[in-house]
Length: 182
Ligand SMILES: [Zn+2]
Ligand SMILES: [Zn+2]
Image 1 (cartoon, helix red, strand yellow):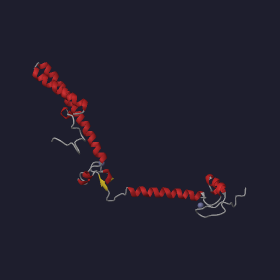
Image 2 (cartoon, rainbow, N blue to C red):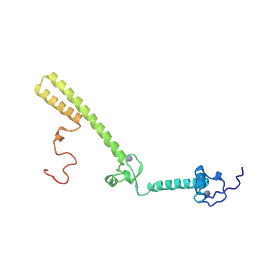
Image 3 (cartoon, rainbow, N blue to C red):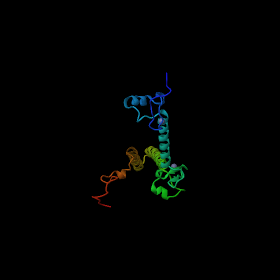
Image 4 (cartoon, protein in one colour):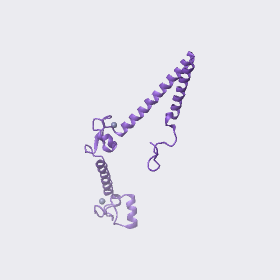
């Protein structure tokens, strides 16, 4: 095989008389169809791909610059995070107190769990009170204990306090027109 010189030209690095082996299959197909003009040798294709990756990497870096004024440290996880990870009110609290969104979320969740635990404990206590009152035979105490228990049970099932079950006062309403009552 005489592959010394070919008829291919690279449109990027401008090398001429290249052999087909310098080009990918796709480029060889293109040469057959269109001839020289828009061919890229393998080296140039690789280089372009590497450049593209480098540019993309540089862009990602500038999007989250380390140590710039746009980062803030979270007082809970001690992580240095972009300011966008914090709410404005949190940032106002300053580095000693501000917490990032994930930390706040976590805290809220554990608070919820602990309040669920508290409710469960209260329920347990109420059940015991009912049992005790039943043994004691005091009707008034029994009634009180029973109604407390059923209130607690209701609260646990709906997740709402009985008082907030009123109609027409739901969250997210009352803004804009039709605002009445205080
Ligand atoms: Zn080339
Ligand atoms: Zn945090």
